[in-house]
Length: 385
Image (cartoon, rainbow, N blue to C red; front, side, top):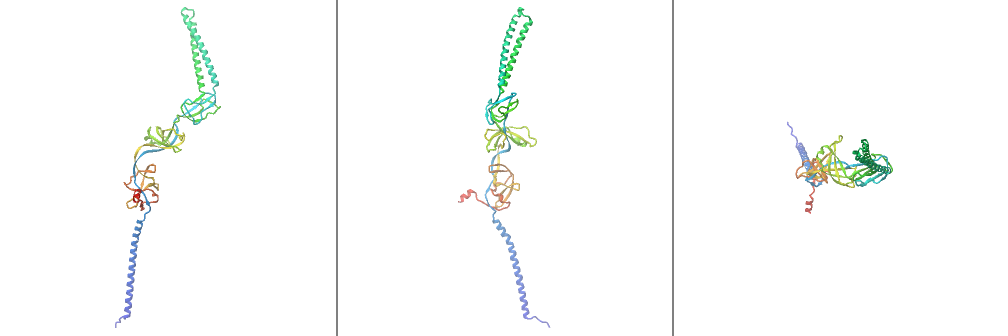
């Protein structure tokens, strides 16, 4: 006979099954809630990050301008021509020194004087010798003339007449010799006066009062006409662009700027550096001194230039970069090549999108992909007030 479970047992089993079903449903609902939360979390983070801007920036656009094409160079300032003034007389003592370094002198101005007592005496002797020779010549000429007049009468032999003629020729030669000696003594006397061969500025003085000088001894150096030039060192590849008359701007060590012009370009190039010299005539200036270093540039006329403020260009990892602000306020980084600089602007050689807006300053704190807030333009800000 089959036994059936009691009502109490059936009730207990039904309760257990109901509890198990409720537990499974709770676990399922908990898993669904966690899955929905996991899906919603990234979307919220993205929204939050999209709404958060890195910085507020101002923007600028590329400006088209016309800039002078220039070539920078360095070089030294030197005398256009320097005259070396020395002694020509032998063994004479300096008795007077008038010129000093820095003096501006005229052509023929007395710079120094050598002792001339002995030469004055020699000159006096030469004058007396000339007078004696001229008197002897006058006598010889008279004797020769009488001999020629008596020749037809036969009162004098041919030999005597020839002697009178020879005496006349000899006397004339002695006069010429005395004149030459007088001129030589006059030249030696003039050489005791050391004069300026040209107008200019005394750049060096080695003359010492009381010194006995020898021929060829340097006493002074003179910058002819006070003219200076800039000798710029230019790479051989750029020499062809420079011609006589090309304008040049030279900045002196004291800060003064001189406007000059190319006089000539050297026909040779230095073997080690491959640089050639370009000679630029300079106007006179108190700060310009021979021997000083100076930098400058040559100008070749105007050419188009696309420019940005220097503050908009960032140097990062060895490259020049600009940051474009796109329509969604996200930054795009551009590597650019820069060229000339004038004032606070720099030439951009890389082609950039037209009408694009770029971060005006502060780009060093931003990176590619950052989101920024764009500040209103000054004119718009003023109108809003």
